[in-house]
Length: 356
Length: 254
Image 1 (cartoon, rainbow over the protein chains, first blue to last red):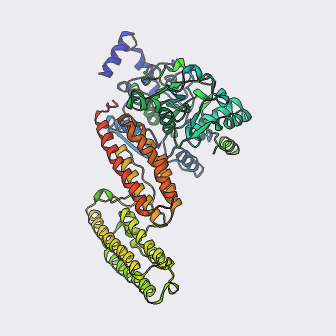
Image 2 (tube, one colour):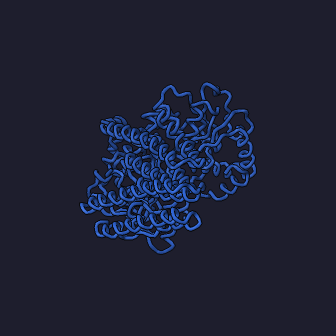
Image 3 (spheres, helix red, strand yellow):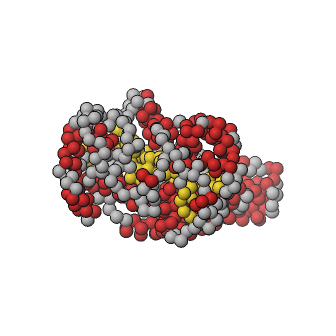
């Protein structure tokens, strides 16, 4: 049904003939050869328009959202009986280090790396191991998320979940930096990887000193939690006024508990509304790894991850999860997501001010 | 019980040994070791009974158990009894160190003996499953669960190991398992679970982050820690049922 609607919609705008053509041309073309020749921003493509996957592929998969990434892989397997997909699972950071170590040892075991954190992608890309991607593939992605050697798959936004009975939206500053001096009680999870990526973004945008001052300021009126769902639940219980967390925890809580006393606020143009991404890169040559990536960027997979995992589709033309404002109405900072790999100075900074 | 026969795990005590993947071929050895252990513990308690505390080195009680291959056979196949064995060993050790009457030490020894026999029975049953190919090969590296129900089973098994490590008098190792299990396992399923039952997630969040760590820190008895874990496992079973049902209603990817 969904597929039929999509085809109808395409036909209605007269796009049915042109989209597959540009895509199919790119399948035969060399990765970099098409750079600049294929129209960008072609939007999401249906799996019906993708070539079958045949051959052997080894994917290194960082831990995903529950079993939902596994569901995606299983669906791809079922649809492509000629594909022999081997998957090695582990923490994203450990797999990134394995890939780099294997390369140094002169071996390559993975053809693809799907990571939940763009910082880990940066680690592998910085080692010169990622293949260049064809322009039609990167062109499907939303503006600001097009990288030559890796493809963001889905996004997550840093948000400020707040207790709707304790705080009004007017009381929440639209600058994350201002929260250090506010009189709101805060919840955070400093040991949590997403929080550390956010601090890294702040460090890159605002500098070391401002970030250290912010951490010191916030720590005076912040309660620590182990994870960011814990932060959101504490906000909902009213233990704190406001927290720092990725968007999906709040959406999922509200789905399970529609009367939950929590809503989302966003800062503007700073690390407080960073859009981070999971991503995939190809390590080996040939069409197969690239075509596998196309499946993850397909309309169906993007829609699935949006509706089932509340992740933000980064391919044009796919609806974001319910309960979230359109990506276009949010003003994330301009940060090269692969630079978030530079975690060591962040941890050093957090330790030096006593929040870790 | 079959659900508790767990493969795909790593011993915290060093090399497991290939024998765990050929339980049937080693049953005679395990029986011999259990009998040897029964005799050794009986000897220590007998010495205490006749010659008093100074005649006994209670560290021997730990060393005997660590010496046998049966140790890893039960650790890799039936962690709850593994915990009982450690609990029994320390029951004797502490009773002797506290200078308790011999009858009380004998009572602790009886509990340990029961745990050994129960363990031998569990390994015999596991050997039958293994022979029929129903038991996965014991891995020397950690296996990653791929679905949410598998993840919840893995969490339950890890919690059994928390009790085992605590019974082994390794509270820091037990606490580390709790933290790792929360961050690397529970975090992955609680997003989906909260859509089904927000109160259950809240409850388990508290268990992982407050109740269980506090029980481990406060020098509670092994039985107290086990009760916390068992209560969590009941909640995890409920979580599993909810997620299995939710998965049935999930839309197809394609």
